[in-house]
Image 1 (tube, helix red, strand yellow):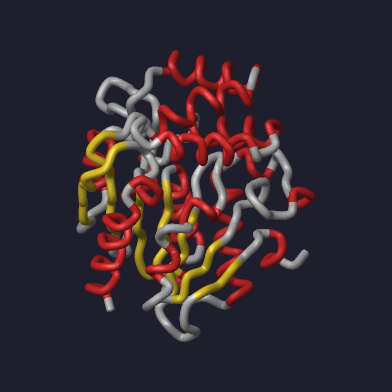
Image 2 (spheres, helix red, strand yellow):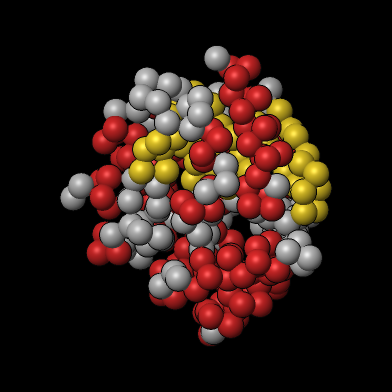
Length: 267
């Protein structure tokens, strides 16, 4: 199968420029980067894609077996890089894609030069020494609600995740993105996302890493950003003056500025 068609890959910017690869999170697609990608394309080559099962990807390529693990999504990333013969990629992962990027970089270290994690969470469930923001019971209830009534869950949760109630159009955009996803696929991706624990993987990160957190984020509270920053040696932590879990939509200028400044320093 043609990987570029399978993952709905779109390349913008100047050929030969450093490569930036933004990746979307659960229930979303590459359109989540529409306010950031054009600015990055002014000085970088930007590679956008959809994970199989999301957006404009080829749904016939999806399987519960492959995409029941974050490794399946990491394989998508690596295979896109191989198809385009990309090297020295700056991978920009939003939400669960931050941990997918960690796995992709560990799988094919020759392909990646840096990581940018936007609202990352290596584990959503609290334990005795870690605060992920949710109890095990919270996650069980979230998944049960999602599985029993996905469209209703989407309409309720998307505005909470996006926050910014004074800008309801943002919550509506995320709701529409969630609702465009096949519920059967969304159920598998949700379990893969919210039940994953990537904390042990963080110590393997050996490329320059920027952790971008929002000042208020119900999905990835600031304790989580601090944990990720502390777990990755030499990483940089920036707290954006933004609310919600999707700063690339709610605060695109600040998000773009932080990414651009970090990558410029690495050149």
